[in-house]
Image 1 (cartoon, helix red, strand yellow):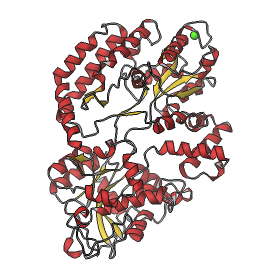
Image 2 (tube, protein in one colour):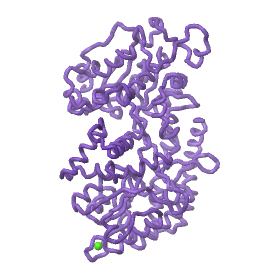
Image 3 (cartoon, rainbow, N blue to C red):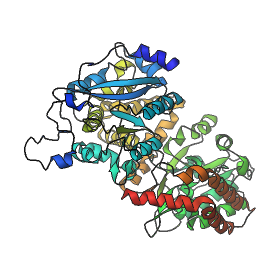
Image 4 (tube, helix red, strand yellow):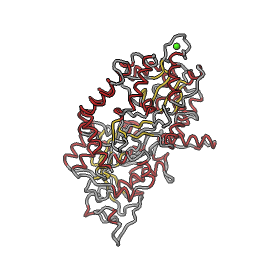
Length: 571
Ligand SMILES: [Ca+2]
């Protein structure tokens, strides 16, 4: 009931009702040929149109979508943009004026794309077969629509119409982003979000403890292990008792915060992601032989008290509490860890001066930053009946250009100061953003610091600079920003990761396979139990070998086969 009511309120303007739909072929008579893909069109002699990534349709066309209105849009954006509605706003006006594309919505529901309201409505639409021109779907639905041949192969349109910038955005994090929506070599959808791998795992260390013990930041795994031992036995908090630990470890072992992935990578082991083996196939990183040595080291650290003796029953929040209470000096995690949980440590004790460092290796080969694929996102797929599949690409090109391009206006189209810095970009039916967006903001800040042009920053970098200045002026709640974006921020190392290709991308980026859906959670549980038992000494490290055999036998083998079938189909 609620969504319908909201819908009737939101649909205040019926845009361009008399325009031909992009799906009603007979009514469309513009200069863009349609039925055959551009790759073939280019071989024809007469009437070739130039495949302009920003080409305007004349007469205009109509492109239908379905969409959601999330809470932020309903509560923050709409009230701060008087005169604009979901169906009549600055973004739709821009698409109309610049591209001759009139956006309409077959339906609109309240909630995000992950909401039950959207899923239910979408399922009804998919079952009816009456799809809009462009349909935002999850990875599993994308696969189903592909299998039932209801959505177009976007490959020729992508090749012909995507700008270099757009192509760069979708490939900057390796082939996985486009690969996640490619089936049998055909591109069936485009993600709304090009940042599928985050931007790195770092070592966060109490530098006030380093200083107190006369130690330098670690450059190697040996250094790091030395520091962890010193943090345990050297009384870094100066209370005369050995009551501190080296590493933060939770019972779940692998998490983006307080996790051990960054430690394992120092031994070239990559649990929880799929990596290539020497024959070019994919294996599950948790089963790599390299895991064994790393587990052995952890067991030794546990025995010597460098890891909380009760970690096996402590979840993320409990370990975060220990860290906030000054009991832990090293944790592995993402750049945002300075906001949580490290900020609490600083709030409790202003001397707790955390800093982020790059991962270290146990030998000469670099430790790659583990990058698990987590595209919590939707894909734009195009109805096979749609007259102008390339219109989607033009919308994406234009969105990027208006927000981040030379001719764009970030302060009008993204987060306008005039509208209380609300994210009006959400008015657009497509919302691609640059990968490594935050790293790019750091690089802008670095450049401005070097050139003395901090006052000329705009957009996100300007907002971050304001937060850092607030911290300088005594607003302690902004501490975390400087730890990421300041001159000594952790992103110094993020830029190095990026420039030197030091990411270990998760190579499986497809929808969950059948066996994965059925068996992965049990396998993950077994993995955690065995690894924890090895660390606490309940099992010898040789239990790892049994684990690998068991893992393959009780479902991991099937999953591995399916993952490799998917991988082969990507090529
Ligand atoms: Ca102590």
